[in-house]
Length: 294
Length: 311
Image (cartoon, rainbow over all chains, first blue to last red; front, side, top):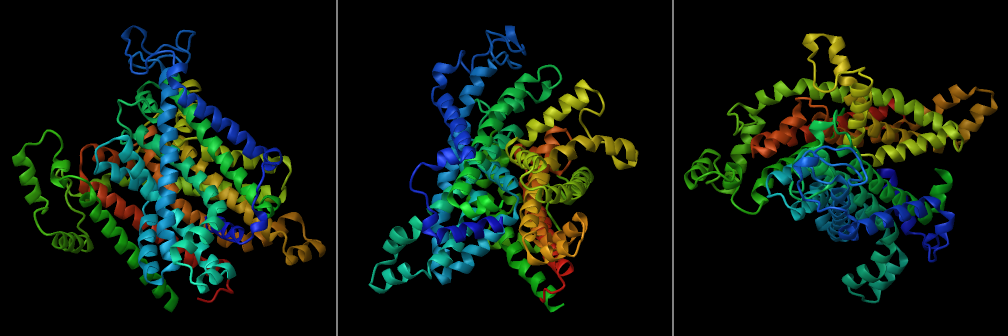
């Protein structure tokens, strides 16, 4: 983790490594494959009402736990609901959570990280709180947060965001400490530019590359944690079809109807893999030295 | 020695912050904590009673003071749902969780470090590629999907291992071991991926050093050279193992549910559904404590790997 951060810190200081065109798409198959996979998943999720063959909530006791067929592509679950349609709709939950958590954690993390990096008086306090948050394993903290709120999509997003924030804060702070000493920042300061303007115009743009890489890893882990929470029964309300909920419901029928767990699980793995590939690909594209060495 | 003391003291603020976070969680939530704990079916009277029992009617600072002094004297409180002291509940659930964690850790160390070193040695060759593909896959496949695939293949189809459940050590070592094979394999995969990746990266870096070239030039074989490299790569690897502890503890919760093992993780999930807040608080505190302690020990082990380090 630390190494990742220090590499990212180096990266911010060397603008020549920033990429301004799309040539890397051909040179970087990891990124290309990941992007194609994620776009496919996004299309499926957005077009869910047209792709789904059945109502994802429709219960049909006559066709309980049937295997895959032409009528039910992925079979049916214990209540006779169509697994394919539920899986297609479930993509919406996962992608919404992934994107929201990445954005929310980045915005809050950037704010706190900049304050810690540029204001000495706040540094100690913010970083101690972050150390404390990092000491509690992420899933456990999210579970505890779910325990004190009413389950909904919004509370799940908040519960997953809180444990992710320290990762962003640490990165932004370490980048700030090096950027703060850069000549162009000092110059802007000495001609009387206001600090907020310096931060937005000069500091933030130079942090974007490592932040985007970090953001993609946060999104991947958020999708996984949401599915874990739902699987454990403390995530998205059971009435909403999500991959984690579907797998939780299939838990008792592993021996007789494995497809109830298998298909949502595969889609989940596909989505997380696509985001991780994008993250890896972006890291390689944005820092050629790293890709040569590793 | 002075360093040991300083490092030990440095863990106090972290644990202090953890205590504040854990204490504040329930007060930060929207709505009345007493109503939340009492559940949807509680009457006004129940809620009022509960508020007094839990001391929620007192000022926040005073509540925190009482809670903390009890905690420091080793009193974790009483479970609201079962009316049993939390420490007793935890003690009953500790054996399976500890067994899984220790076996997983052992499995990881035995497999990940050699695997990562091998990948670095063969950098760019097919073994290396396989290891890298494996690590990306292990990061992306959800723990519970792999878990059910393992159960489906080895327990249901092949019938080699017990499907689910846990067998106590007291009931025999062999059944105990059999009941843990799949859960530990399952949990170790992610952890192995993490440590293998880090081992590969650091060993690869160390292999570029001049003294490795010297070692090769004087005719040392591949294995002694790698041992040289590994010793110098040990510190980042140890750090990763420590950071990965958070992953391991979180993974235990999920694995216990998949394999129906009555451990601490299962207890947490049940407690969430029962709004049994003292239990959740205790597990958070203890797991954070374990995390901080393990990382402290790893910090102290740096000296062992590199005697040049002066604290």
